[in-house]
Image (cartoon, rainbow, N blue to C red; front, side, top):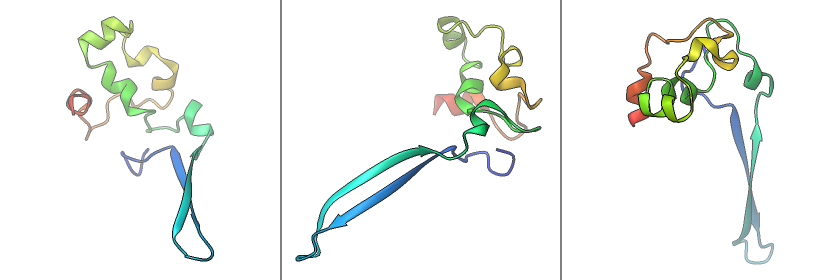
Length: 97
């Protein structure tokens, strides 16, 4: 996102259930959910989509394997905002991590 390059569009809700008599944890449940559905298919000006898409386009083996050779400018999910290369992000290096 524009404010936080490492923010997530997904969230988790964790419910912890306790035994009423012993007050010990007896079970738990984790629910995954999508925080902002609109941001999955649309990005505002200056915002990039999922970082992995840009990272994969920097790797020649992956671009060949997944036929990404045309680059991010030609993918709708990557070019809507006008920002392909973020000034403070090294996509190739981040992919290697």
